[in-house]
Length: 76
Image (cartoon, rainbow, N blue to C red; front, side, top):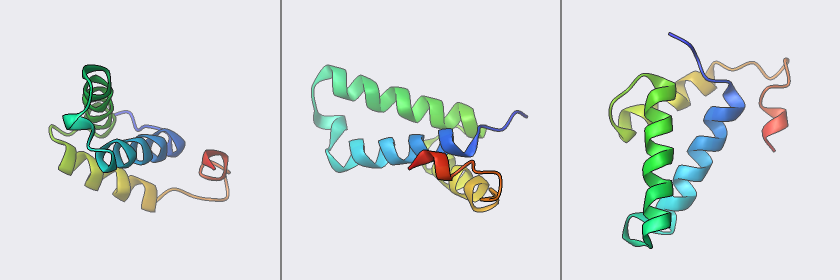
């Protein structure tokens, strides 16, 4: 299985959490669609089928990411 770059995973998690905090699932059609897109991309990126499993998998992958290669530093 291909693995998403740590920066991509971190950005997806951050965007999901921001949208969730804003209650995107109850927002405008455009905001709801963006939430669905982020959830779908998280699932595809982690090889999972639901957002909870995707978040767990993404965080697990990030915990093993090496900072020496600069992959997470570029995310900030």
